[in-house]
Image 1 (tube, helix red, strand yellow):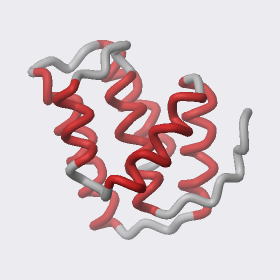
Image 2 (image 1 turned 90 degrees about the vertical axis):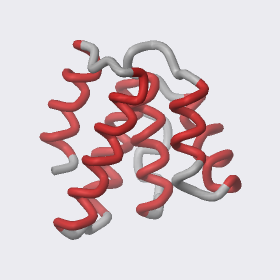
Image 3 (image 1 turned 135 degrees about the vertical axis):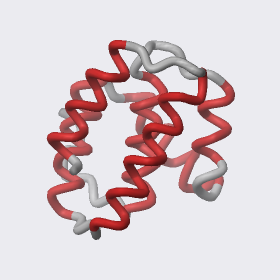
Length: 111
């Protein structure tokens, strides 16, 4: 795994997590990318996107798990994060089997 101990901020973790969710059905649509871009500043998006492009799904999940273990989220922050993930999953009006599977994995890691 590449740099599993990345010291992300909550904002960086959220962007990485949303990028992973957008990629899970093997198709990152422009609508999904635009939705993620609107949730952060361009410098954060570009930095995290460059890192995301170098990782495979397993590495990404491991990085998320490590970062979640270090960052402390409030119940309110977790509820908002889950809402944003589901908004992204449904942005193409589908909730595919691979998205449902990743959602279950994230339920165990993040929530």
